[in-house]
Amino acid sequence: MVSFPSGEVATVLRASTSTQDPYGNDVPRSDTETDYPGCAVWPRVSSEDVQARDQVIEGLYVLFPVGADVLSTDRVRVRGETYLVDGDPGIYRSPLTGTKIGPQVSLTKVTG
Image 1 (spheres, one colour):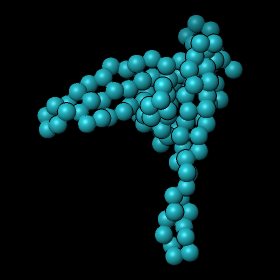
Image 2 (cartoon, one colour):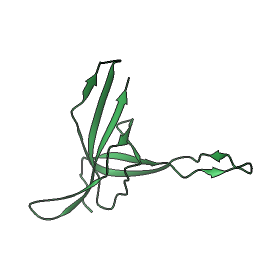
Image 3 (cartoon, rainbow, N blue to C red):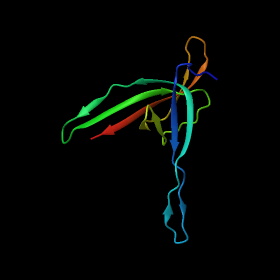
Image 4 (cartoon, rainbow, N blue to C red):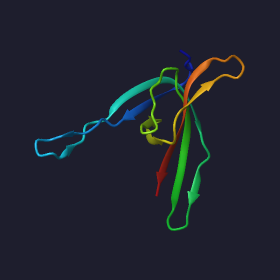
């Protein structure tokens, strides 16, 4: 398994399916958290939308170790901030050696 010696911890937050109480009301369950140490993290270009309000869209890329389980419906906590996974993860494979490194995800956080 490839991980980066000076990499960072990324925590995948997956919402559990809700259950129902005896009256048929949905009862949400807590998120499942899975830590993945040794991740490569680098910034994406941020943007601003100032049409109707001040809105900032920022993001990161995260390269997880091989075998990491990340879905497009997950959230990821990195550097103390929680981001949404933007699209499906892609599996990174080195063009030089063919070595699989792991899933790469785009993360997005919108404020404002």
